[in-house]
Image 1: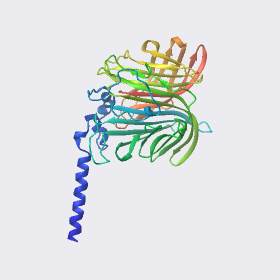
Image 2: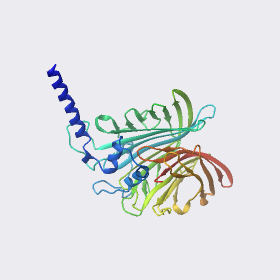
Image 3: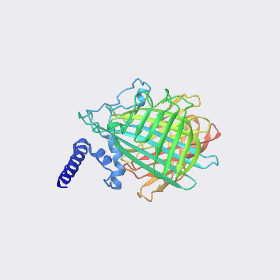
Image 4: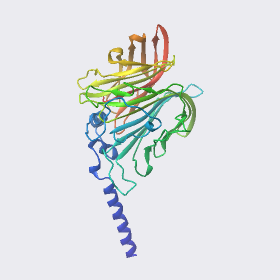
Length: 393
């Protein structure tokens, strides 16, 4: 009996030592350390600023997006570990056969904990941290569901393949169903809700910015490599409280990677991804400065029905906030209705959230929500749907 107790004590001691080695604080930059420790309770101010602050950090050891590059697929659907941050981003507006509306987001983030991998015999130790967010907007019930997961990339718990489109964190995944990118299957399950969706594409891939180089400030390296699929016909199943809903609709996919995409003077952004009834799409990010002004590096693109891209600069787009909403959770005031105009395209639309409360109170606080669109283009009525992201409020 005494021998058994001694053996059990040694096992417990080894487990404690393994945990100490695994979570060694020197492995983490300050912001990432907060993300990885889910028991850490951030203040509202820390949540509001941490993500945009992370994207403005600089480190000479990391690679930077300095000039246009030649993209290669499917390898560029995989990881770019020499860069500090990266994400695979899906949003969509869906409805069931009765017209009941839903929105969803599934995003995978990669954060490099160091510029170079650490040598180790352990398959568990890895310098790449993954985070994933899953949301579901149920318009009829005025409910917004969220979930969040973390893992290092060690032992295949999370990662992205370079031989096909396949990114995963545990059992959440986005995976090409064949040798080509599409159809792409999204699967993610939380305690209260789940998605199982099949995405196809009817339009070409869009290289945002200058041939895929999206500049966020005049400073060298404050840029990302950025491409999108702006219209992805979608079908599949949503599950809420164990009840399945067959749905159809359209999704949007964004891919970006960078090291220091924001400048120190920039506080956050308002990002619009809009799909219009004439089969065109608009992406525009309005960068905000810490002095409260719009940044002159705000930019985007209009994708015409034939997939032609029309670049948009800050002077091409006017965005007026028509209303605000105060979150009962964070007490943060967000814009909640917009009028967006592109005079050169004779386009003017009003953008309204399907429900106001689509705020993610997770490790990084931000508002990400499904919206509806009404307005005119060339003097004719136009409608649509999309997603808006508000970061840094």
